[in-house]
Image (tube, rainbow, N blue to C red):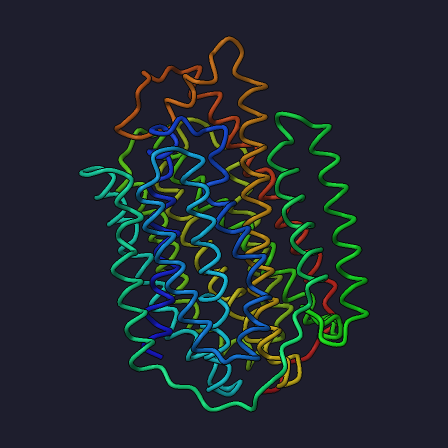
Amino acid sequence: MAAVFIATFMTSVEVTIVTTALPSIISALNGLAMQSWIMSAYLLTTAITTPIYGKLADAWGRRRIFQWGVLVFTLGSFLSGLAPTMPLLIAARAVQGIGAGAVMPLTFTIIADYYSFRERAQVLALNNTAWGLSALVGPLIGGFLVDTLSWHWVFFVNVPLGLLVAVLIQVGYREKARPAATLQVDWPGILWLAVSLVSLLLGIQMLARTPLAAAVLLVVAGIGLVLFIRTEKKRADPLIAPTMFANKTFSIQIATAMILSGVLIGYQVYFPIWLQSLYRIGATEAGFVVTSSSVMWLAASFFVGPLIARFVPKRISLLIITVLLLAYASLTVAGLHFPMWTFYVIAMINGTGMGIVISMNTILSQHLVPDTMVGSATSVLTLGRSLGQTVMTGVYGAVLNMVIKATRGPIPFARINGVISAKGSRVAPTAAMDRVILTGLHGVFIVVTVMLVACWWINWRDPQRTIIKQ
């Protein structure tokens, strides 16, 4: 559990540090047009490798795959810190994602291996203290490093953490001996899953520049998804077992976690950009918004066990999603003088709601499948969360760029790129530039609002109308 705790801290602090530094990275590397790939490359490789590692962990044991993921993640962090250009940074982030694809799902799987359904809520809440701690110190460390040194150091900080985790796992992590299993790698499933995900993300990224090519790629993504589903139905040992989705409530948990993770990445990336670009505050101060949400997430997760013991999960989700919807809808009409304290209120609402619903999704998705499929169910949930973040990172980036290009008028795109920073802004901002950036951010949060409406409708259709017994 010590190894799980530290690994959770390491992978979660990555997000809070990088999002705080993102405006400075965009400005330093002239990367506004490619900014979404900083997160997308990481999330895409995480999404593709997660189910693969789930299968490998079932056959070879958790320890070996966990150790591999930690070392690859650490290498990716080191290479990200060294990156001198945007393409090299994106490539290094992809390496980080390959490691995270093993680390993130296995933390949940190990907890499920050792704790019963009744205990899992409290153990997950305790493990969330690592996430809460990273959320508390991540923006502070990230903002301090950006303001005093450079953005490169926000990646280097994970290198000693990764080495520490590797040592702890090597010395202290022991797992029960498992019978030898014959590994049947579902290569066709891996191929079609990769084709579908890569085509989907590339298509979304190209929407703003080459709509025709984007449309072709989205069609390829759809074909890849159909072929992936057909392949999985025919395989004796599929990468993702279709039988798990026979339970509609299980499917709704996956869909909810996927959508809310997409909402979450919008908040994590675009709140700091909004505050630094339009309010001219430093990276450290902007990072406190991310921190407030994470602290509330941590506190709320301790209430998940008592809530699902007393209330129908569907009713809990519908109430929380309604509150989130109202909070985010306010950002679609926010002006240049929207009170800054409201961002903290929205962030706290976000953290409270997400802390309850996504933790509940994790517990229920493991409980609603047979014991022999708990590892696969955890892998599918993690894949869904990664996919939601991956796809929506690309969508948000495309929407922001399209709206800015459509409304910038005679203002050069490069000048707007230079404004999206905090103290390091290389261009003197004007009121016209502020309005263009604000309109682009409105576009992003309109998409967020639409997603929350879809999430509410999906949960409304949940057939589970009774309390789930422990």
